[in-house]
Amino acid sequence: MSLKGTLKDFGIGDILQLIGQQQKTGSLQLRTKEQEVRVGLKDGQIIKVESVTRKRKDLIGAMLVRSELITETQLEAALETQRRTLKRLGDVLVSSQAITAERFQSMVQLQATETIYRLFTWKDGTYEFIQEPVEPGSEAIRPLRAETVLMEGFRMVDEWPVIRKKIHRDDLAFERIKTLPQPRHDEEGGELGSIGPSERRVYEEIALGRDLRKLVDICCLGEFETCKALFNLVKGEYVRAIHPEGTQAPAPGDQRLLARVAGTVGRVMATMAVLAAAALVVSRGAWAHPGGSPGSAFADPAAQRHVSKAQRVRIEAALEVFRLERGELPESLDSLVQAGLLSPEELRYPWREEYYYRRLAARQFVLLPPLR
Image (cartoon, rainbow, N blue to C red; front, side, top):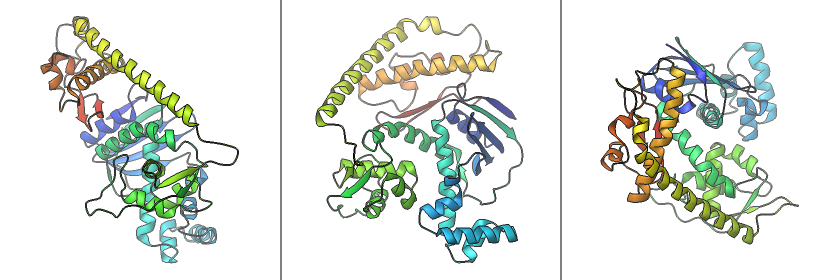
């Protein structure tokens, strides 16, 4: 199996879904003009992640120093030993008792996941998947299920814009202003606005002179999880953001203006969704595929993917109308047919099977092309 193309036609989510659900083994190479990442998969699970163009600050040794798990002197000594003995860096650091094996493994895992999740921000580039035997990298990671990465990646893409409205500068510092509530036994965190283990970890690391960049390094949670924890802490008024000298936060009047604009945009979007539904119902006949089974009219896969992208917009419009009418998204796409918003054929056009759909929350969902 060889699969290649551009990320504009087939996004990283589509690729991971296809490889993961078919449990393929092989190498996935993704490239832009400035970056190149290679992902090794075995039976649909990610077992290796390599960034060919990884910056020095993202190398595992530099990450360990920035997180204050080892010193610069310890790293230099370990690198010298590695050059002399050809041992893995992790083995050298662990044998010299500079770090525990468990701590080193967790940082290797963090390095891999950070690289993977950044792929979801790529707007263009190329990909190629080659089916071939794959062996773990020099610093092995725990296998990552493609579906888990897919769900987490979409969650991050969905929540980042909200988080960045408050945590909008890398040089922001933070100050504690009240103590955290006692933890609940069933506390898991995860939702925006909640206080969980990540928030408690970040709260404890807040100190004079530590800006956002340093907190990301020292907390070892990853950029997104650290920023999300800070967002929740600021929102709950447990900490406050301190802007660098010479800069200031948006004035209350500006925030009110932004809120009014956001409200107006929201109402416009809702109106557009309703109008889209009306157009969707009226124009249904124009989208019906030619005689024969879905997908039979497309000899060119690129053309089929292009039509599929337009059809997904159509289904998303129907989902939004359903949500506006019922207050929540449907459990399955069949509900759109029962509501009279789409026909059964439109749930799979231009493919043979239905689109992959999963409701994540009242307003969040994943919609991807089906497996063929």
